[in-house]
Length: 166
Image (cartoon, rainbow, N blue to C red):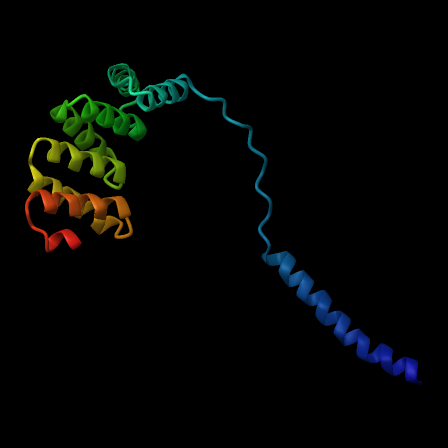
């Protein structure tokens, strides 16, 4: 008799566990079908090469390669960023501004473009415009630490030390 009572108690517990397992199985996502790896495109290779030139301070060569990429892929945001950064390093502030604004017209959320645009404006001595640019970036992403640091530096250049604590 003791044995049959144990079985009667075990059956509802077992059913509960079985139901829980089935419920979990129904909620688990089905595995995604396997995708073939996409081979890198010539543009991917060019972009990596241009970014490598940028890190090696070969700014003119990097800018030329970024321009080549943009000639065939005008929506390539990393190429806009790279061209803007290379132009900035070469002291070509207006070209950096153009690369940034063109890129931002395609992707207004690209923080690197906002940051580089602000740096180009600051390079031209247009600190108020640089601050406006960084403010727009910080409105999109308030935790953008580099943006806070850069906007503080611009306020210092303007002698507005209280606002530099931004």
